[in-house]
Image 1: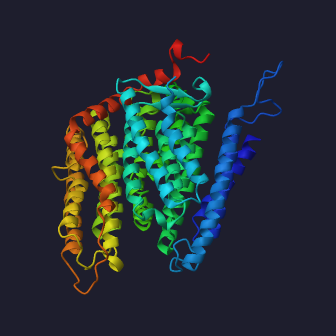
Image 2 (image 1 turned 120 degrees about the vertical axis):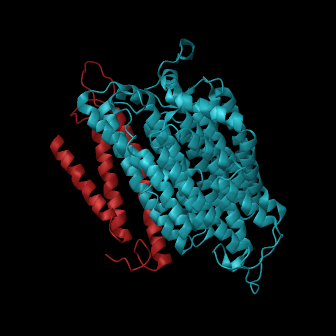
Image 3 (image 1 turned 90 degrees about the vertical axis):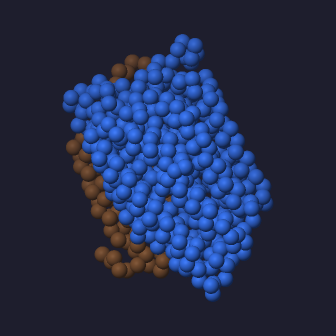
Length: 111
Length: 505
């Protein structure tokens, strides 16, 4: 399970890095989204992968899941969601004001 | 528990909420709220400064949860200095912006107060994840402020700024997650203790997380080679906003100083001295790169932006040298350079408005009105920025050079800082002569200024001059701050081992 989830994070991160290095705003936005997915999964597993364990104290249980990463990842999701919405709108505005969707605003650096 | 510690957070947040509620009302009312809140934040910062001046560390436990289980706000000397510098800068910028700079968009004052909320939070928090959240708050507000007014160049520069900072935030979360995964805590004091007694197995992981954090803070602080975003973003935004952004690179420098003195300090276990091979060389490289950009700039605002890069490099040179003398010199320089670069941005804005269509490009333009006033002001600001006596820039640079005298890096620090100072003077003298002496007699000068337009700038210059007159007490205070940072046990004890009377009941 650990190996699988590590692989998932690795694939998400590398796709995110590749896309955010592209020259047009749409792939860059997608890349940022994938990076934020990767980091959300990463934060979630910092409390270790534990199955069927309660996060708050119950009688007669000895094994608990760590509740803090769940709170952290919730905050991170909210922030990254808001930022993604913002960067989508900003890209649209850049497309309108600059006349094309290249991140530098001109076609010279076309990839 | 001292509730005044949280007041610098609540005041701008409250002002922001009120501004949101009255967003349809007259501009004058919004300006009044914003100005009153900014001036009151100076009062709060001075009060906190007095309270910590006996050497104590004030800890505010949110919800009265004992650290490390709850989030704490911590006010020590360093935090108090940063709060006061921010509050003074904010007041000057508001006083300047109410003269017309705030009219390019509807939410200037709202975003401005929320940015202050983020800044004050970043300086006060004692929790690493909370630091991330406050970074996001100030960044979100800064995105809005940066794009205020629109325009093609501003949108393009804003897009780069936003994308870079989003990647920075992602790296920050990776670093925070790694530290939590290994050490099981996010309270900075608790992290420091955990790192001090780390198993050999985990040293590599924690070092990687520590250096990842450094990349994030270096991006915020505009440390070379991560400084490329700054000149575009700062020089194309509206210049009152750029004046406020003079404090933004200092947030990165503050975070470097706080995290690496507390968590990766010289005596703190196997990761001690994590930044030693990196910070000083990169800071000197930043100074050099900023100076090259300064010489190549075609506009006054661009020069001001490159001077921000140079000042960030100089500041981090001081922090990179380490030791009480260098850090206290750095803190003095931090206050000076924030005021000086903000003053230059404001002056560039005033000059570009007076020159009409020529704006701030370094080409021949109309004769400026008001006789010798603007050449005089320009000279004053340039003396401060480039570090020529008798203004505060000279004192700051002199203290940094003095603290470098015993270092093995002495020749590098002296060489780079002195040569770049000379080149800075050359660059600024060239732009001064181009703006004030090479006059195109056909061009029409714009309307004259009113005295109130200069209020913010005058207040910044007075603050800079006060830094020279009261250099002794200011340096003493920053020396105490540096001593506190070099000896983190006071901070650790205040956060983790409160006295019996302080314990939550």
